[in-house]
Figure 1 (cartoon, one colour):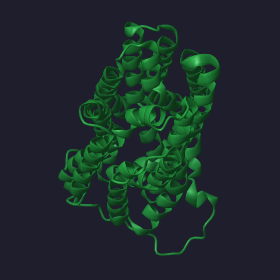
Figure 2 (tube, one colour):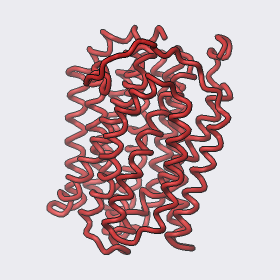
Figure 3 (cartoon, helix red, strand yellow):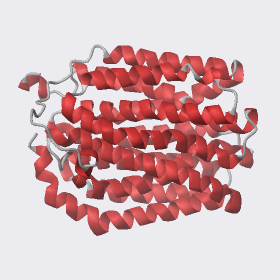
Length: 396
């Protein structure tokens, strides 16, 4: 890629990666609101079992992400991304064959491997094609592809489920993902200089040490986000609002709105102002979700949480990429996303049991407390760490 091309944010490769990610993520988000209903209503499992379904793919994603990071930094990006995306797509076609909870658990665990590899590779590749001085806005804009999928997919999935059924919903999810795979085939992957010398395997190859401080608030944030996306459809049924589809639309709208301006603010002023805002609106949204058990509170919470998601996730991702060199970019993205998955997996599993003891409202108030802890950690440790280490990653 020439230097002039690399100065452009909206290159053909960036656009293709964003569209491909949108389509792949749409296939993924088809399953998020529908599997909890499928587990409870069709497989006749308990509410707490929903947490196992989410935790299953999260655990396998946790296992594969560090290895994916090493592979990306050792062998390059292209074929790892393409193959993992194809496997992810084909796995969706197996869901119609699964009719027991145990088999679904196994399939979700297997699916998590390809999901973990695909998202780690995709996020690393897109950072490669974004000019360093436009990294904040580039990551923010790219993340809108996830956001639009979050908006479109739950609404479409629930509509297809109501109109046709689960099998049709699974097949259409696979079709979306396959179209994303086709987009990626046309991407011009940047040539990354791969180190020729052999490096011993040790824990720092799997987990980038510089990514750990920034990944801790991401893990805590993942815990609260997992509680929202895993149980909101069941909470909606309990409240008898019938607004879970609208919730996801408003959530995605909040994420999209905040991503449009968050990246530009980051590139000009840095992360602190953004993180303050993100934490405050996320905490307020969780408070609304726990205390205001009506349509106004339910949908207001969606907008506030969406704004928080759209601010904090790309901000933290830009931060970790700014403290490492290009040769450690795969490892640091794997570290950050692993932390997020760990938060989602352990949080969803624990919150599923907690909801049976104190109800969904109490569970979301607990999530609010976790978000407060994440905010304290950020201002106590992460802000200073980033200031001391930021220059290294901006030079590449």
